[in-house]
Image (cartoon, rainbow, N blue to C red):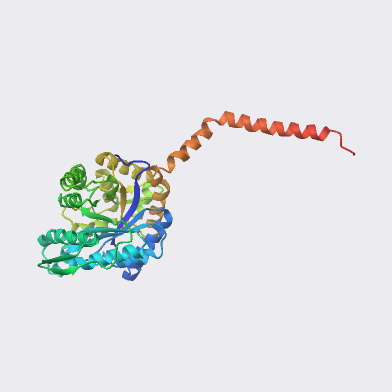
Length: 390
C-alpha cells in the first residue's frame, strides 16, 4: 500500500539544535511554544529529543517538555525523539512513559534509540560499542512490562525483582525505534513489530538504504510473527521555505552554516560545509539532502521520497534553527498552508469543486442572467397588476 495523497501525515522532529549564544532559557521555552504553534497550524505530530552535552541540544528529558506541551495543546501527538535507553533503568523508562500516556490522554508516542552524541555516552561512563546491546536489552524488558508481565531479570547494569507496573497504559501505545543508515534499527523494529523513525531519509547514504530497510523490517517481522504497517514508518528531512527561493536563502543566513558545522563534528556522513550560505543551500537542494526554497520545491521533495520508498506514514520536518524565530514560524505556517494539502487528501475535493465552477462558466453566467431576468419580469408584472381595493 503506497501512502500518498489522502494518507500522509506531517510532523516536526525537534532535537532541538539551537545556536550556541542564544539565551538557553528562551531556547528551551521556544521548543514548547513551537509545539503550540504546530498544533494550531494542524500538524499531526511533534517529537522532542534527549541529549546531555554539546550546548546546542539542551533538553535532557523530553518527557518533561512533552508533559508541559500537552497542557498547552489540543490534538497534536507528542513523541520522545528519542529516549536514549542505555542511560536509563528500563523499569523507570517504562513507568515514565505510561505516566505520560495518562497525562496526555493517549497522545504520546514512544521513540527509542541508543543515544547519538559520543560525549553523552562518555559522561555516562559508557563506550559507543556498549550502546546498541544495552538498548536491545532495555527494549525487551520495557515491552514485557508494558504488556503487564512481572519481570525478574539481572544484567550488568540493572536488576529487576518481581517488577510489575502499577499503572496500565491509557491507550494502545505507539512505539518506534530510530534508524539511520545501518540495518540495526529496521531489524529491531521488525523483530518487535514496532514503527521506524528514519532520521537520515534525505542523506544520500540513508536515502539509498530506505528500500532495503523496509525489506529488513518485513523479513524480521515475518520471522517473529509480526505485521509491519507503512503508516508507522516516519521519514525526516530538513526544509525551510518562503514565498520565494531568494527569501528562503536570505532567511537561512541566520543559522544554516552554523547547524551543518555543528553536525560535522558529530555525524560520520557530514558534509564539508561551504563558506557561503548560498553555496550550502545549492548543495542541499542539488543533492536532495534538504530544501531551502519554495512550497513547490518542498512538494517535489516529498514526492521523490514517496516514489523512493513505495509509501510511508509521516513526513517529519527537521526542527532546527536554520532561520530566526519569526522566519521559522512563517516556514512552518507556509508548509501547512501550501504543502501539506497536497498529501493529506484535503486539497483534491476543493480543487475539483473549483474546476467545476470554471468548466461551467458559460452555463453559470447564463443561469444567473436568466434568473435575474425572470425576477425583473416578475416584478414588472406585479407592479402593473391592478391594486386590490377590497
